[in-house]
Length: 267
Image 1 (cartoon, one colour):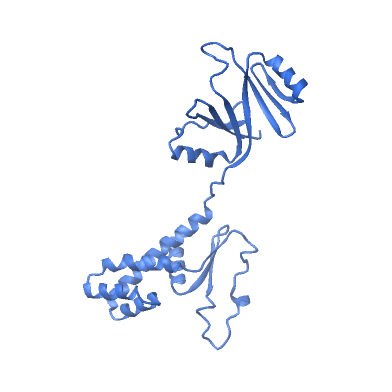
Image 2 (tube, helix red, strand yellow):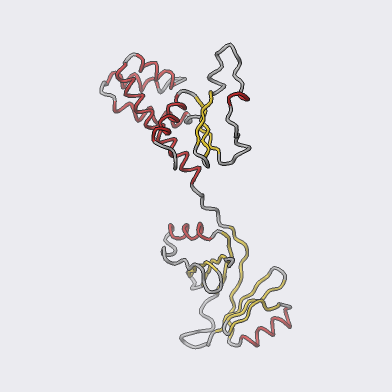
């Protein structure tokens, strides 16, 4: 975030005064304009064409507009302030004000009767609004984790004779080979993929040790973090930039079936 503390405080004071604040997140320029719903008491009608910044949200997607806090958040700020007031009498009056219609106005009406408490409120409220502004900017400038997209699922079938089975899938099922290695092959027909993996069919490398399936996805990091949070896989399980151009991780289900999640990487 490239705004100074003074700028953050000015924004907080402006939104408290009912202004709309426009923040250019590329140039880090700030401009505030009146809220037409609150500042229309002058004889001259407020004209948004004269007041609005040159760049509007439609013209610049990096323009953050802060129009103040929600009623719920304002209520929370008021409720956090009440316990720090020294006078129990003032506390009771402020608490009663928050339960009435137009609670914020009633709350400030009580404060007008107690100048010292009113100044304490102003400082407390501005501090909380500064935190709100910082949070809004942080949310607007933080790249979100994109949801994982599931693209397709591919079975990985065991074989003791890769060359023989490649020919069988070509001849009988019409698959063509996309990739052939000494112990692994990828076949495709239309949008369907089959992987063949060679096993020695020994005790250490059994032919039938459980089924294997690969789920090909996009944005694997979001899914991986979900699995880490659930305790399904450890944080170091994700393999990045494998020799076959993927990011991937795997796990076993309760029946010892191997499940891999794979994101293909362009090199």
